[in-house]
Image 1 (tube, rainbow, N blue to C red):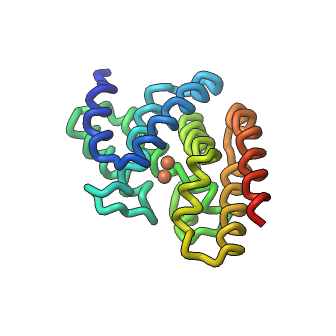
Image 2: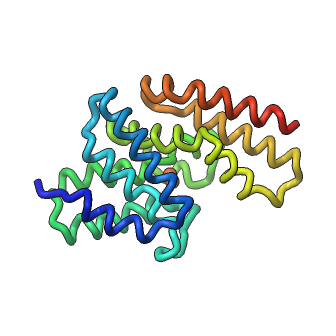
Length: 194
Ligand SMILES: [Fe+2]
Ligand SMILES: [Fe+2]
């Protein structure tokens, strides 16, 4: 199987804005550790994490609401053009399309029912890496900035719900263990806002 991580990096990173490039880099680091601990396929996890948010970035019109689908379409075309084996591509695409379903279900997001749950070990690791990266000062600032137009009380309440959803829907044992101290810090920070 001829998969060049460098080729994917060269394709993906110039298309990501600073914020998503930072997020994606850290997701990959977390994903590599979790994949090892969970005995998941590291290459599937890494390729999926590189592509997982590309659909929300500017060259693809930033389809934030259903970016899992958008990202999967971009990854599918890339892997098809590079003649990646179908089985490998299928595993990667499942990770990408399922990467935010459990959190969305937790908060009754309208798109949640249409998206698949992470079924494979790799998809669960990808999900957890994405959520764990967001359980951080980065995730807090990103979330609060996006909701800065809301009344203060609503902004804080929404952040509490959202970060609780990230933590409570983690899919792997190692993910939960890694996330716990991060979630405690996030809760403490948010508790200080009210
Ligand atoms: Fe995402
Ligand atoms: Fe993400």
